[in-house]
Image (cartoon, rainbow, N blue to C red):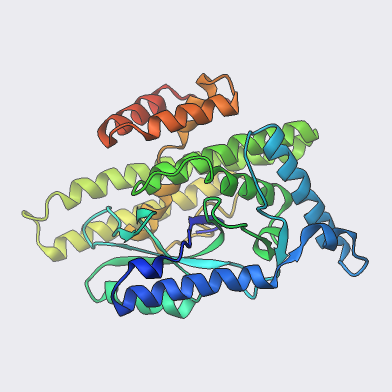
Length: 358
């Protein structure tokens, strides 16, 4: 899956931990993040330097404009985020591992001090993620490792701008910056879907306003088309997820072989519908899951759902806030403090009221 983001706070957590595996994990996380901060160069100095390639200078200038827009129009506090620039060795900054039981759609939760539990685990080195992945495959889990374009430290550190951002198209880079800055506003321990859906909603609505302000109708139409495709893909995944959940409830009735056979049939059908969706939209040969056929499994669709599940709810809440972003953030804060069952009920009600206007 492309252009994911990750909550990844590093607060000297090793002092709170025990066990070699846990210490090893946090060691690689801290070293990885510090390695980024050490090699960073100030964005402003790169913009004024004659040695900076023109294309990179344009991207960095655009990032400064996006930061100003995020502060002034979206009410997002950037602090010193994105003030340094880093060239990465890979098109991703970290990779995420997701692991889900063979007959479930509930991701395994990795729990951390301060952060609470999350439905993914991030690594700066692919080989470390693959090693951890094997432990879950040995248990029969469905797994997925995806490249992560950016991550947020929730304002505890000055997250750098890097080449994974600047290698994106202009509007995607700007949208991803909005997404990461949104993570600084609200964070709920143990509710990945809430956190990511909120940031995705800010990303989408922020991009809409950004393109409207810049008077770029072609890019705006393209962004709307991508949003419509994303919505349609989410509808396909939701329908398949409902069928899978119904199937998995029959574990006491059906044999393991029957469960596996029907599970694969559902993923094959999803692949066919996804391919048909892309074919029906000229110029949309690459969708949210890339080019079909896709190696769908529980982990892959669970991850997609984490980022999209409550997006309509948050966009509706923003609409009901009169597109006043500070007021919207206050409403989200209030919602975040509700008990989980009340929060889920409120999000469901908001989603049901949402209507897309293209």
